[in-house]
Every structure is written in C-alpha cells, then in structure tokens.
Amino acid sequence: MWWTDWAVTPEVLMKMEHHQKINHFPGMYTLSRKNLLAKNLMKMRKKCPEEYNYFPLTWTLPGDYQEFKAYYETKPKGKARTYIVKPESLSQGKGIFLTRKIDDINPQTHCVVQRYLSKPYLIEGLKFDLRIYVLVAGVDPLRLFIFREGLARFATDLYVTPNKDNMEDICMHLTNYAINKESDKFIFNQDANDMGIGHKRSLESVFGTLREKGADTESLKLKIQDVIVKTIITGLSSLRFQYRSCQS
Image (cartoon, rainbow, N blue to C red; front, top):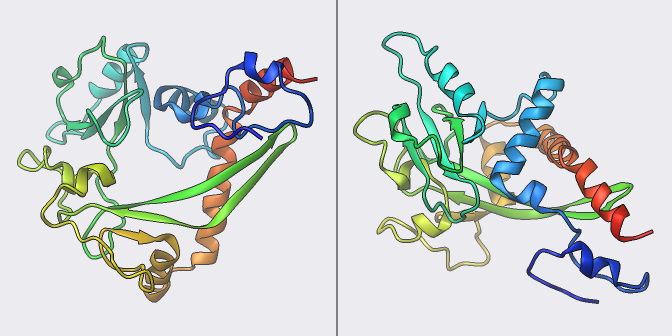
C-alpha cells in the first residue's frame, strides 16, 4: 500500500500490480481544480439545467470573458450584481475578492467568476459552509462513501448584504479557516465534548442546530448526497478514461 498526499500520474499506476493499492485515482484534478470543476458543472447545466441548478452562474476566465461580459451588461438599471472572483488553482481563500465592476477583473487572468449568493442561510448571523468528506472507492463502476461526520466553518464578522462599504470584509464574506483564524473574534473550541461552539464546529452539531430551528435534516442529507453524486459525475468520463488507460 502506498499512501501519498500528491496527485498520482498515469505512469505510476501503469507500473502497479493488481495486488498493490494507492490512495488516489489519476486525473482527480478534473474535480479538485476550481476551473476544471466549473467547466464540467456548466457543461452539465447546459445539458440538464433542472438537475444542475444547485450552484450559481459560473464563468472561467480568460476563455469565458466575452460570455461573462455579455451577461454583466444585462444588469437592470440601478441594481448592480455582485460577483466573487477566485484564482483557479489557489487555496485557503488566497486571492479571492468581491466586486460589482467588470473593470476590476483582468480579462486575461486565469480565474473563476461566479454570481455571489447575497442571501445565504445564517446561523447566529454568520455565514458558514459544510465540509463533507467523500471517499471515491471506484470509478468503473462508480462507488462512493460519505463520512457521517464533518466540519462546519464559520465566518467571524456578522453578515450584511454586500454594499460599497463591506465588499472587502473577507471575514464577513469568506468562511475559510485560514482567513478567519487570524481574526480577533475567532473562537477556538477547546472542548471535545461540545463541538457546537466557536467558529469551527462539527457537522453533526450544525445539523442539531438546524433541527432545533425546525429543519428536516434527513431530507437535507439526501439532497447533499444528490449534489455529491451529480458533481462527481461531471468528471466521471475523464476519470474512467484515465483509469482504463492505466489498468486493464
């Protein structure tokens, strides 16, 4: 068995015997890189718009710049749209910014641009995201396992709808741990028996909070599973092709 934190090249997999195991499939970058995932998702939205309606409109620059510009120019008078811009291959929130002006975006920059979701669901007035862990155990046929526990990452500044005064408040609009842990408001959880406090909580504690608010969390979990499957399907043909090319 070989456990590696790095992507696996097809050349490595070709040399492996059937009794040997490695913890990556070749070509997983088709799902893990923001720009490739965005392209895959938008392709599927054009084919199956009702099934792939769970993410905001997305453009990958520089290739989609003219398409993005055409959409930008359709904005209603007096109602500026907010966009979030993300470098295609960075992590931990580096280089991400919000804007309402197309001139703020270099058309030659390699990045992903999305309509910003300005009315998020809040807990205690804060934006949050769910980090859910999925094991891809097979691509031909596709086999997935979802870990029951996970993380929720919270922003540290109370959320206010984007305006000209708060567009640069990254601790309000972004939930990345690497960014918010530097805030003076960040609360580290020191109690392993209570994972529902602070700005980094357990997934189950958040589901518990949602149940207290009257949410049907079992239905929500099924919808999340649906999103996970549909998202991985967007890159499945590429994953299968690379796997079949490496192993008989």
